[in-house]
Image (cartoon, rainbow, N blue to C red):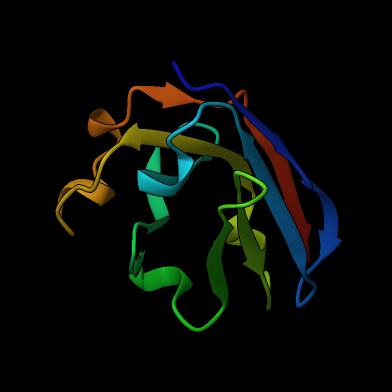
Length: 124
């Protein structure tokens, strides 16, 4: 079992930055694939970024967002820069044990463990 707790969301103006954190329980964090997904009102949940021993990003966040992990703290981060109003959504941290393929890391159905979500609102 893995429990995930996100933090760091909030209200920011366009062009601003936020850093999301996701603290994970469990003893196998260093070999756990961690992902960030988001869901805006009326839209499906979509992939944002994932990290194994490598990192993967959705095209719409490349060069703006950075995913990283601290295995000693069992925490994954999402640094979000140059935020846009269209980035407004609930951001969810997700985990699955072991390493997936680059394709599977972008599929929310592959992740059995989810956090409660944190709201990110970007004003124009």
